[in-house]
Image 1 (cartoon, rainbow, N blue to C red):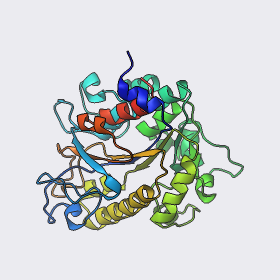
Image 2 (image 1 turned 120 degrees about the vertical axis):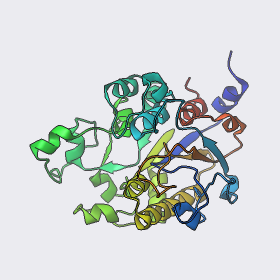
Image 3 (image 1 turned 180 degrees about the horizontal axis):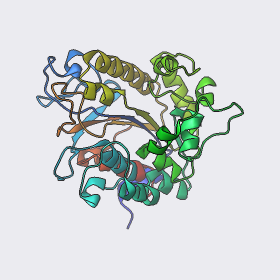
Length: 324
């Protein structure tokens, strides 16, 4: 029997944009340890209360990151949960940091929400652009390039390279990943949004404002059922306990996200989420046990009130696109 909500969604034109930011939890409203308490960001959500009202009728939902598994939530397992809709840490009975291990790789290969969307005739794209050398070293599908690789990896580095949960989720569906040529041509985004970090590392990419990046995001998303963007600098700043880097990363992401929301097409639904806490408590280098905020912008979606864990974000994407 088809749920009434699913029937309604299938009858409407719907596409979904997921803006993912690594390492942002719901912490204390304490500016001495929480950079989000020094700003009025979209993600400035606190345990003491929901924070300021969101623009454009947005909604905030805090969700669990632990899945009842002992230990601190980690990126590989929780990103796998988001990108499959399955409770990955509970399934493998542990939290896995960094990059997916073989059990998580197998889960992504079989249950990637991107793979399931494509199998159901839906379209999906990853807005981030990568160096050709990185994608080729990991044998990940990519867009074609006529230019030589930007660099080569030393053999020792090559042996240590691992693919992220996000790239594996798209590779499972054989969706080509964007390269820096795409970023240069206005058809992809650098991981830092503006391109400054890529330039600092010697890559030839244009520098853009967060607002210009938002325009490119919707250009990339045109005609796509599902569009994904990933930003991980807040998590890096949290591990480094670096207030300056944290504020820079959070400021840039906030400006970008606000511009994406302000220019949202009528048929698009926007979700913003993280995988685990970190940057909201710079008194520690470790991930936190805090819930993470899920923000939603779009037409009424009362089903989001039932969100419980980060895996429910992936399940919601599948449900909205009528893939079960």
